[in-house]
Image 1 (cartoon, rainbow, N blue to C red):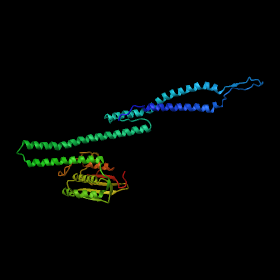
Image 2: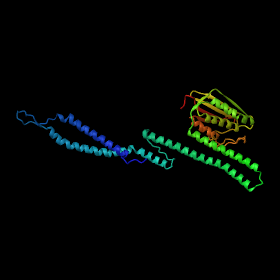
Image 3: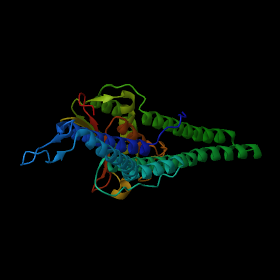
Image 4: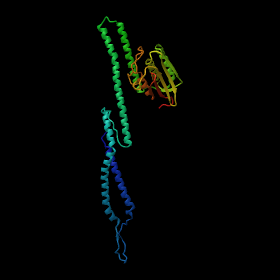
Length: 369
Protein backbone atom coordinates (compact mmCIF):
# COMPACT_ATOMS: atom_id res chain seq x y z
CA UNK A 1 0.00 0.00 0.00
CA UNK A 2 1.47 3.35 -1.10
CA UNK A 3 1.66 6.07 1.51
CA UNK A 4 1.92 9.84 1.08
CA UNK A 5 5.50 11.12 1.26
CA UNK A 6 6.56 12.58 4.60
CA UNK A 7 9.58 13.61 6.60
CA UNK A 8 12.32 11.07 7.00
CA UNK A 9 13.30 9.75 10.40
CA UNK A 10 16.61 11.60 10.16
CA UNK A 11 14.85 14.93 9.57
CA UNK A 12 12.46 14.25 12.44
CA UNK A 13 15.34 13.46 14.79
CA UNK A 14 17.19 16.58 13.64
CA UNK A 15 14.19 18.83 14.24
CA UNK A 16 13.57 17.18 17.60
CA UNK A 17 17.19 17.69 18.67
CA UNK A 18 17.20 21.33 17.54
CA UNK A 19 13.82 21.94 19.15
CA UNK A 20 14.90 20.57 22.51
CA UNK A 21 18.11 22.59 22.32
CA UNK A 22 16.15 25.77 21.59
CA UNK A 23 13.74 25.00 24.42
CA UNK A 24 16.65 24.54 26.82
CA UNK A 25 18.11 27.90 25.71
CA UNK A 26 14.79 29.69 26.19
CA UNK A 27 14.35 28.15 29.62
CA UNK A 28 17.89 29.20 30.57
CA UNK A 29 17.26 32.81 29.49
CA UNK A 30 13.96 32.80 31.33
CA UNK A 31 15.71 31.60 34.46
CA UNK A 32 18.22 34.47 34.13
CA UNK A 33 15.36 36.91 33.85
CA UNK A 34 13.39 35.53 36.77
CA UNK A 35 16.22 34.99 39.21
CA UNK A 36 18.62 37.81 38.29
CA UNK A 37 17.19 40.74 36.34
CA UNK A 38 14.16 41.11 38.53
CA UNK A 39 16.40 42.40 41.34
CA UNK A 40 17.62 45.28 39.15
CA UNK A 41 15.62 48.49 39.85
CA UNK A 42 13.51 50.13 37.18
CA UNK A 43 14.79 53.67 38.00
CA UNK A 44 18.30 55.05 38.32
CA UNK A 45 19.85 54.73 41.74
CA UNK A 46 22.48 57.34 42.75
CA UNK A 47 24.56 56.69 45.81
CA UNK A 48 25.93 59.92 47.52
CA UNK A 49 29.61 60.28 47.98
CA UNK A 50 31.50 60.53 51.25
CA UNK A 51 31.37 64.34 51.30
CA UNK A 52 27.57 64.41 51.10
CA UNK A 53 27.42 65.46 47.49
CA UNK A 54 25.70 63.35 44.79
CA UNK A 55 28.90 62.38 43.08
CA UNK A 56 28.69 58.62 43.83
CA UNK A 57 28.27 55.70 41.47
CA UNK A 58 25.20 55.34 39.28
CA UNK A 59 23.90 51.71 38.93
CA UNK A 60 22.37 50.54 35.65
CA UNK A 61 18.62 50.11 35.49
CA UNK A 62 16.69 47.15 34.12
CA UNK A 63 15.90 48.83 30.81
CA UNK A 64 19.57 49.39 30.07
CA UNK A 65 20.39 45.75 30.85
CA UNK A 66 17.59 44.53 28.63
CA UNK A 67 18.80 46.76 25.81
CA UNK A 68 22.22 45.11 26.04
CA UNK A 69 21.05 41.60 26.95
CA UNK A 70 18.26 41.07 24.39
CA UNK A 71 20.34 41.21 21.17
CA UNK A 72 22.95 38.89 22.62
CA UNK A 73 20.29 36.50 23.84
CA UNK A 74 18.76 36.46 20.36
CA UNK A 75 22.19 35.77 18.86
CA UNK A 76 22.67 32.89 21.27
CA UNK A 77 19.28 31.41 20.30
CA UNK A 78 20.15 31.69 16.61
CA UNK A 79 23.45 29.95 17.29
CA UNK A 80 21.69 27.22 19.23
CA UNK A 81 19.23 26.75 16.35
CA UNK A 82 21.98 26.41 13.75
CA UNK A 83 24.06 24.23 16.03
CA UNK A 84 21.04 22.08 16.82
CA UNK A 85 20.15 21.59 13.16
CA UNK A 86 23.69 20.80 12.00
CA UNK A 87 24.62 18.74 15.05
CA UNK A 88 21.27 16.98 15.06
CA UNK A 89 21.62 16.09 11.37
CA UNK A 90 25.09 14.61 11.89
CA UNK A 91 24.13 12.86 15.11
CA UNK A 92 20.96 11.41 13.62
CA UNK A 93 22.91 10.15 10.62
CA UNK A 94 25.40 8.41 12.87
CA UNK A 95 22.65 6.86 14.99
CA UNK A 96 20.64 5.69 11.98
CA UNK A 97 23.62 4.30 10.05
CA UNK A 98 22.85 0.71 11.15
CA UNK A 99 19.32 1.06 9.78
CA UNK A 100 20.78 1.85 6.38
CA UNK A 101 22.67 -1.44 6.38
CA UNK A 102 19.54 -3.28 7.51
CA UNK A 103 17.51 -1.57 4.77
CA UNK A 104 20.08 -2.53 2.12
CA UNK A 105 20.06 -6.15 3.31
CA UNK A 106 16.26 -6.17 3.21
CA UNK A 107 16.27 -4.86 -0.35
CA UNK A 108 18.73 -7.56 -1.41
CA UNK A 109 16.58 -10.24 0.25
CA UNK A 110 13.51 -8.86 -1.53
CA UNK A 111 15.34 -9.24 -4.84
CA UNK A 112 16.11 -12.89 -4.06
CA UNK A 113 19.61 -12.67 -2.58
CA UNK A 114 19.40 -14.57 0.73
CA UNK A 115 23.12 -15.18 1.18
CA UNK A 116 23.89 -11.59 2.25
CA UNK A 117 24.37 -10.94 5.99
CA UNK A 118 24.47 -7.62 7.85
CA UNK A 119 27.02 -8.65 10.51
CA UNK A 120 26.66 -5.34 12.33
CA UNK A 121 29.82 -4.56 14.37
CA UNK A 122 29.98 -2.90 17.76
CA UNK A 123 28.53 -3.56 21.15
CA UNK A 124 25.16 -5.19 21.66
CA UNK A 125 22.33 -2.64 21.56
CA UNK A 126 18.86 -2.49 20.03
CA UNK A 127 20.20 -2.08 16.48
CA UNK A 128 22.71 -4.91 16.96
CA UNK A 129 19.96 -7.21 18.26
CA UNK A 130 17.74 -6.29 15.31
CA UNK A 131 20.55 -6.95 12.83
CA UNK A 132 21.42 -10.29 14.46
CA UNK A 133 17.77 -11.34 14.43
CA UNK A 134 17.53 -10.39 10.75
CA UNK A 135 20.70 -12.38 9.96
CA UNK A 136 19.24 -15.40 11.75
CA UNK A 137 16.00 -15.05 9.81
CA UNK A 138 17.92 -14.85 6.52
CA UNK A 139 19.95 -17.95 7.40
CA UNK A 140 16.84 -19.96 8.21
CA UNK A 141 15.03 -18.68 5.14
CA UNK A 142 17.98 -19.53 2.92
CA UNK A 143 18.18 -23.04 4.37
CA UNK A 144 14.40 -23.49 3.97
CA UNK A 145 14.44 -22.33 0.35
CA UNK A 146 17.41 -24.60 -0.43
CA UNK A 147 15.60 -27.51 1.21
CA UNK A 148 12.43 -26.81 -0.74
CA UNK A 149 14.34 -26.64 -4.02
CA UNK A 150 16.14 -29.86 -3.23
CA UNK A 151 12.87 -31.50 -2.26
CA UNK A 152 11.16 -30.31 -5.44
CA UNK A 153 14.03 -31.64 -7.56
CA UNK A 154 13.99 -35.00 -5.79
CA UNK A 155 10.21 -35.26 -5.98
CA UNK A 156 10.27 -34.47 -9.69
CA UNK A 157 12.90 -37.14 -10.21
CA UNK A 158 10.97 -39.72 -8.20
CA UNK A 159 7.71 -38.94 -10.01
CA UNK A 160 9.38 -38.97 -13.41
CA UNK A 161 10.64 -42.53 -12.91
CA UNK A 162 7.23 -44.30 -12.77
CA UNK A 163 5.93 -42.12 -15.59
CA UNK A 164 8.88 -43.05 -17.77
CA UNK A 165 8.43 -46.74 -16.95
CA UNK A 166 4.71 -46.55 -17.76
CA UNK A 167 5.46 -44.88 -21.09
CA UNK A 168 8.04 -47.55 -21.93
CA UNK A 169 5.56 -50.35 -21.10
CA UNK A 170 2.86 -48.74 -23.23
CA UNK A 171 5.30 -48.30 -26.12
CA UNK A 172 6.20 -51.99 -25.90
CA UNK A 173 2.55 -53.01 -25.88
CA UNK A 174 1.80 -50.79 -28.87
CA UNK A 175 4.77 -51.86 -31.01
CA UNK A 176 4.63 -55.56 -30.09
CA UNK A 177 1.02 -56.82 -30.26
CA UNK A 178 2.21 -60.37 -29.51
CA UNK A 179 3.60 -59.35 -26.15
CA UNK A 180 1.80 -60.75 -23.10
CA UNK A 181 -0.83 -58.14 -22.24
CA UNK A 182 -1.32 -59.54 -18.75
CA UNK A 183 2.34 -58.99 -17.88
CA UNK A 184 2.20 -55.41 -19.13
CA UNK A 185 -0.95 -54.75 -17.09
CA UNK A 186 0.61 -56.21 -13.93
CA UNK A 187 3.73 -54.10 -14.30
CA UNK A 188 1.68 -50.98 -15.02
CA UNK A 189 -0.39 -51.70 -11.93
CA UNK A 190 2.75 -51.98 -9.78
CA UNK A 191 4.23 -48.78 -11.24
CA UNK A 192 1.01 -46.82 -10.78
CA UNK A 193 0.63 -48.12 -7.24
CA UNK A 194 4.08 -46.79 -6.36
CA UNK A 195 3.29 -43.44 -8.00
CA UNK A 196 0.08 -43.20 -5.96
CA UNK A 197 1.97 -43.99 -2.76
CA UNK A 198 4.52 -41.33 -3.56
CA UNK A 199 1.83 -38.73 -4.28
CA UNK A 200 -0.04 -39.56 -1.06
CA UNK A 201 3.23 -39.34 0.90
CA UNK A 202 3.95 -35.90 -0.60
CA UNK A 203 0.45 -34.68 0.29
CA UNK A 204 0.80 -36.00 3.84
CA UNK A 205 4.18 -34.30 4.15
CA UNK A 206 2.67 -31.00 3.00
CA UNK A 207 -0.30 -31.20 5.39
CA UNK A 208 1.91 -32.05 8.36
CA UNK A 209 4.28 -29.19 7.57
CA UNK A 210 1.38 -26.70 7.53
CA UNK A 211 0.16 -27.85 10.99
CA UNK A 212 -3.41 -27.87 9.75
CA UNK A 213 -4.75 -30.38 12.28
CA UNK A 214 -6.84 -30.39 15.45
CA UNK A 215 -5.13 -30.76 18.84
CA UNK A 216 -6.51 -33.57 20.99
CA UNK A 217 -5.29 -35.89 23.77
CA UNK A 218 -3.48 -38.93 22.38
CA UNK A 219 -2.09 -42.03 24.12
CA UNK A 220 1.08 -43.06 22.29
CA UNK A 221 1.02 -46.55 23.82
CA UNK A 222 -2.31 -47.25 22.11
CA UNK A 223 -0.92 -46.02 18.80
CA UNK A 224 2.06 -48.35 19.21
CA UNK A 225 -0.27 -51.30 19.78
CA UNK A 226 -2.32 -50.39 16.70
CA UNK A 227 0.74 -49.97 14.48
CA UNK A 228 2.26 -53.21 15.77
CA UNK A 229 -0.96 -55.11 15.15
CA UNK A 230 -1.16 -53.75 11.61
CA UNK A 231 2.47 -54.56 10.75
CA UNK A 232 2.73 -57.88 12.62
CA UNK A 233 1.96 -59.98 9.51
CA UNK A 234 4.75 -58.18 7.64
CA UNK A 235 7.18 -58.80 10.50
CA UNK A 236 6.26 -62.49 10.77
CA UNK A 237 6.54 -62.98 7.02
CA UNK A 238 10.16 -61.82 7.06
CA UNK A 239 11.23 -63.37 10.33
CA UNK A 240 11.38 -60.15 12.32
CA UNK A 241 10.42 -60.25 16.00
CA UNK A 242 8.30 -57.26 17.00
CA UNK A 243 8.45 -56.33 20.70
CA UNK A 244 6.42 -53.55 22.34
CA UNK A 245 6.49 -52.20 25.88
CA UNK A 246 5.61 -49.09 27.86
CA UNK A 247 2.94 -47.59 30.06
CA UNK A 248 0.18 -45.14 29.27
CA UNK A 249 1.83 -42.22 27.46
CA UNK A 250 -0.45 -39.16 27.23
CA UNK A 251 0.47 -36.60 24.61
CA UNK A 252 -1.41 -33.96 22.63
CA UNK A 253 -1.75 -33.59 18.88
CA UNK A 254 -3.32 -35.23 15.86
CA UNK A 255 -4.10 -38.89 16.43
CA UNK A 256 -4.03 -39.64 12.69
CA UNK A 257 -0.65 -37.98 12.16
CA UNK A 258 0.92 -39.54 15.27
CA UNK A 259 -0.37 -42.94 14.17
CA UNK A 260 1.23 -42.32 10.77
CA UNK A 261 4.46 -41.35 12.55
CA UNK A 262 4.47 -44.55 14.62
CA UNK A 263 3.57 -46.73 11.63
CA UNK A 264 6.31 -45.20 9.49
CA UNK A 265 8.97 -45.78 12.14
CA UNK A 266 7.94 -49.39 12.80
CA UNK A 267 7.60 -50.15 9.08
CA UNK A 268 11.00 -48.62 8.39
CA UNK A 269 12.53 -50.69 11.21
CA UNK A 270 11.09 -53.89 9.71
CA UNK A 271 12.12 -53.37 6.08
CA UNK A 272 15.65 -52.20 7.02
CA UNK A 273 16.59 -55.16 9.16
CA UNK A 274 18.54 -58.41 9.10
CA UNK A 275 17.63 -60.98 6.42
CA UNK A 276 16.45 -63.31 9.18
CA UNK A 277 15.98 -63.29 12.94
CA UNK A 278 15.76 -59.51 13.04
CA UNK A 279 14.35 -57.66 16.05
CA UNK A 280 12.30 -54.47 16.37
CA UNK A 281 11.68 -53.01 19.83
CA UNK A 282 9.12 -50.27 20.35
CA UNK A 283 8.91 -48.53 23.71
CA UNK A 284 7.04 -45.57 25.19
CA UNK A 285 7.89 -43.73 28.40
CA UNK A 286 6.81 -40.64 30.36
CA UNK A 287 9.15 -37.98 31.73
CA UNK A 288 8.59 -34.75 33.67
CA UNK A 289 7.29 -32.64 30.78
CA UNK A 290 7.75 -34.93 27.78
CA UNK A 291 6.76 -38.33 26.46
CA UNK A 292 9.20 -40.49 24.51
CA UNK A 293 8.61 -42.99 21.71
CA UNK A 294 11.62 -45.11 20.76
CA UNK A 295 11.91 -47.61 17.91
CA UNK A 296 15.05 -49.76 17.82
CA UNK A 297 15.97 -52.39 15.26
CA UNK A 298 18.80 -54.66 14.23
CA UNK A 299 20.40 -54.44 10.80
CA UNK A 300 23.46 -53.24 8.99
CA UNK A 301 25.88 -50.85 10.65
CA UNK A 302 25.22 -47.19 9.90
CA UNK A 303 27.69 -44.37 10.39
CA UNK A 304 26.63 -41.26 12.36
CA UNK A 305 27.24 -39.13 9.23
CA UNK A 306 24.81 -41.25 7.21
CA UNK A 307 22.26 -41.35 10.03
CA UNK A 308 22.14 -37.53 10.13
CA UNK A 309 20.92 -37.44 6.50
CA UNK A 310 18.24 -40.12 6.68
CA UNK A 311 15.46 -37.72 7.68
CA UNK A 312 15.85 -35.81 4.42
CA UNK A 313 13.40 -36.76 1.65
CA UNK A 314 14.33 -39.67 -0.64
CA UNK A 315 17.34 -40.73 1.48
CA UNK A 316 17.90 -44.42 2.25
CA UNK A 317 20.47 -45.82 4.63
CA UNK A 318 20.47 -49.43 3.44
CA UNK A 319 18.96 -51.48 0.67
CA UNK A 320 15.48 -52.77 1.35
CA UNK A 321 15.64 -56.47 2.04
CA UNK A 322 11.93 -56.99 1.50
CA UNK A 323 11.07 -55.82 -2.01
CA UNK A 324 7.39 -56.72 -1.69
CA UNK A 325 6.92 -53.49 0.28
CA UNK A 326 8.78 -50.90 -1.76
CA UNK A 327 8.98 -47.47 -0.22
CA UNK A 328 9.25 -44.01 -1.68
CA UNK A 329 12.05 -42.66 0.53
CA UNK A 330 9.79 -40.38 2.57
CA UNK A 331 9.13 -42.46 5.69
CA UNK A 332 11.61 -40.77 8.03
CA UNK A 333 11.09 -37.38 6.37
CA UNK A 334 7.37 -37.60 7.13
CA UNK A 335 8.14 -38.75 10.67
CA UNK A 336 10.44 -35.78 11.20
CA UNK A 337 7.90 -33.32 9.80
CA UNK A 338 5.09 -34.73 11.99
CA UNK A 339 7.38 -34.55 15.02
CA UNK A 340 8.30 -30.92 14.39
CA UNK A 341 4.64 -30.07 13.75
CA UNK A 342 3.96 -31.33 17.28
CA UNK A 343 6.83 -29.25 18.74
CA UNK A 344 8.93 -32.35 19.31
CA UNK A 345 12.36 -33.67 18.41
CA UNK A 346 13.39 -36.75 16.44
CA UNK A 347 16.84 -38.25 17.00
CA UNK A 348 18.56 -41.04 15.03
CA UNK A 349 21.29 -42.95 16.85
CA UNK A 350 23.20 -45.82 15.17
CA UNK A 351 23.60 -48.95 17.30
CA UNK A 352 27.15 -50.31 17.76
CA UNK A 353 26.07 -53.81 16.70
CA UNK A 354 24.11 -52.58 13.67
CA UNK A 355 20.72 -51.09 13.15
CA UNK A 356 19.45 -47.84 14.57
CA UNK A 357 17.47 -46.34 17.42
CA UNK A 358 14.93 -43.62 16.58
CA UNK A 359 13.79 -41.49 19.51
CA UNK A 360 10.80 -39.16 19.30
CA UNK A 361 10.29 -36.74 22.19
CA UNK A 362 6.98 -34.86 22.37
CA UNK A 363 5.45 -32.47 24.93
CA UNK A 364 3.37 -34.35 27.48
CA UNK A 365 -0.33 -33.65 27.96
CA UNK A 366 -0.59 -30.44 30.02
CA UNK A 367 2.98 -29.33 29.20
CA UNK A 368 2.44 -27.96 25.66
CA UNK A 369 5.26 -25.61 24.69
